[in-house]
Length: 334
Ligand SMILES: Cc1ncc(C[n+]2csc(CCOP(=O)(O)OP(=O)(O)O)c2C)c(N)n1
Image (tube, rainbow, N blue to C red; front, top):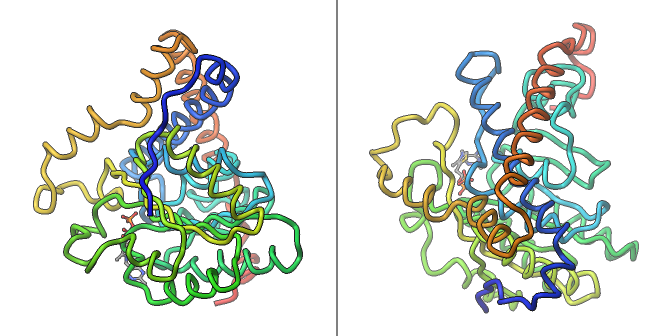
């Protein structure tokens, strides 16, 4: 069991990676601005149902997906927009899905919690807490049998640690040396309850009990996440077996967009602390500027481009047609 931190880098290394670190910055900004639009659609009563925002947690999805091939798999959660975007989903089809339009990833029948995109290896978001652990492990099993080198990333919140199926699949994954990485995004709260009230023992102990390689990482540091993910993905791809990554992070908004008054379960000061001191975009932006990989104007330009991209995508989705009534039972299995 180890804790990963980003290491000080040699000057040459930074320059070689300049494009990568600008890309990760852009990806985090895109996710943040996507979520701002989702919240806007909800508050203007333009979106049916609810959504669970990922703002604050961007470095986890981006740091990990940056370490993946396009054909590697991910499985996601109810808080899945960031995972989908980081793996390559396009915002116009995502917004279309959120608004129930035919152009959406599931033809408008899935909504926020059921976005899947096989073209980018995304096996789907999942409204069932822990619901994707078997899917990711099965994908890794198939990958091993077919010998195609694909790695599966299984994202889940720490609330999923209460699901027994996680322990069944970790046991098999370790016995069969499957190329799967279980990524526990510990944002401290399972809905409105601090995880310390629901989680006996330690989080890491649950993985080490099976002999699974277990690492914790600062989930607000995109470079640290990427560094450890790169190592674990290479290890899994070359037959080294599964891993468990605990990424410590925080969700800025409520459990879902309607969770406005949160003071009965967490303080405003706590939220403020994470937003001002631990924001993954600010931290990475400062790092880019300090190392002269970008100036403030360049970062503002990235933000402006991402904002325009999201506005265009929302407009696309708003203007897109609903599925016709005769499609109501198509592709529906349950
Ligand atoms: C099996 C199951 N039980 C309960 C729920 C209701 N529920 C939705 S999200 C959630 C909490 C999830 O917490 P966590 O896994 O830590 O993810 P986070 O919301 O913090 O990202 C619960 C209990 C559900 N969707 N599925």
